[in-house]
Length: 317
Image (cartoon, rainbow, N blue to C red):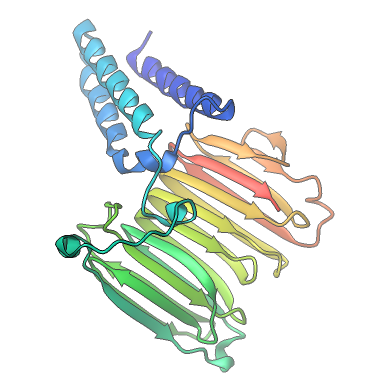
């Protein structure tokens, strides 16, 4: 048996075994806890490339040993509950303790970025470009401004820029910190932002590593595009527009999408080794799923998922 096929087989068994044990309640596995260690998969791929060419038995043993040790490490780390994130904030008591000795480690700055709402531009589409890494994003309600972002900054420089064209208002909320792009830990940045509900939104988010909790159910979001490396994404779509598009491209990610039950929804997937859970959807063909009311519904949501080693969940509410 070829080494690469054996490695892919072991990876599939690992993912399937974890999902099965989790579904039966044997273990609690938190995919967010292993995202910090996503470069492990690059190491596995590199070792495979190095030793697959010489076709030596010793090389095969080394490759398999590295794979087994790495997966064992991820298996135990995945059972550790994530801490100090938007997900963790919903699941633990708010007990605040201040220790002067820890001031150096917990130092941060607060920043507020605002762009006023111009009623004359409301007929145009508003494009919001979000980029950065090591950030926790949360959509935290509405505002009379076009956008209002409260930022808890521990590293990097944030900026909000505006460009107006004949057809669109383009906002760019970005963080300039190349060193922190792929880091996400307890010392990351938090961005709680509000959007105007009168605007027609196209939202494009690019994250190196980070997480986003976005409830779009009350907003007119025509397109949401997400491009992430090691990320957690939890979004909720609404039904205020006839058609909405959700496009997600990810490396190692946990993606959860909620869609209205009265909207027809179709999912197209290109997901490699990713896990998929599309409750309430019918499988039409390989990689294509849709709801039973897709043809009859006047509101439709199209979802495109492209991931290497991710967990994709789509549910109706």
